[in-house]
Image (cartoon, rainbow, N blue to C red; front, side):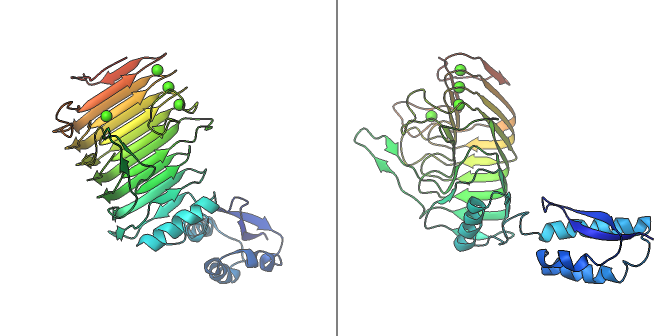
Amino acid sequence: MPVYFLQESKSFSYWILQDIPGNSRMKKYLPSMSSFCHFLLIRFATHLAINITENMKHTLLGISIMAALVSTNTYAAVNVSDEATLNAAIDMANADNSIQKIVFAKNAQISLNHPVIYTGTQKLTLLGNGAIIDGSAAGSFSIADDLTASTEDGTLVFYTAADITIKKLSVMNSATRGIVVNIPDDAQGDDIQVSLEKVEIRDSALYGLHIDDNADEFDDGDLGSVIGIELNIINSSFIGNGTGAIDFDGIRVDERGEGGIHAHIIHTHIDGNGGDGIELDESGEGDVDASMKHVTLNENGFYNEEDLDDGFDIDEAGEGDLGACPRIRNLKRII
Ligand SMILES: [Ca+2]
Ligand SMILES: [Ca+2]
Ligand SMILES: [Ca+2]
Ligand SMILES: [Ca+2]
């Protein structure tokens, strides 16, 4: 009569049922499991001597999912609720590429004194659960005599070419840029995907969202990585950013070198930003392909009264094409 046993998979992301001739191997597995799993297995020990019916298999598989959820490798082990736990979670993800998810406490209010910087190489999802991050004390920028501003700071900064997904998170009052994705110059492989759902970036001094694949500090020149950028935004808002200096947009994408920009935005407000509402700036090989549906672009571009900016600005240069839907008016320039 077979005896079934819960065996840890090599990836530690799920568990499988295995037919084992006897239960003597159970103790061998116990030290590598969490205490929660120990408890489950001790309970199962009373059932191991009997043949397991189809219903029991379902029960075991159901509990196996619970086991996966308590595995420390499925997400950072902290429930992010303040600056210390946010930094701890990001530090864990920076050090352990099996951590791909960070979960915030519901409606957490987080004030930062410094930028939070992700440097990992694995894709990462931030589940905000309605949390609000206030970046008014995080980072700084300088303004030159010609009124151009420069900074390396942002409230949330991602130095990575891996996919970034952010859901139900607000970034408010950033002293510099709200959310920054800085793509390494030597990035290889697939395009980076940046996906935002129910994200609000409001009242940043500089850019609200900045995705930067330009090697130049001031985003001049044509040097960038060989990968492109896919930006997907749904049910989000970018409001009141770019009020600290000239030419800072609600959303800014700088793409250089090989690769293009593919931006798809749905049910989103991009309003009241000092520079452009959104600027997609591409050069070198690659296209700009943009679509918007149910998006507002109201009252942007007011900061510099001598050279008003736009709702939607697309720059496509070098080899490649421009495709946009629906019709876009008042394009600032297309090279
Ligand atoms: Ca590129
Ligand atoms: Ca601009
Ligand atoms: Ca390009
Ligand atoms: Ca191009």
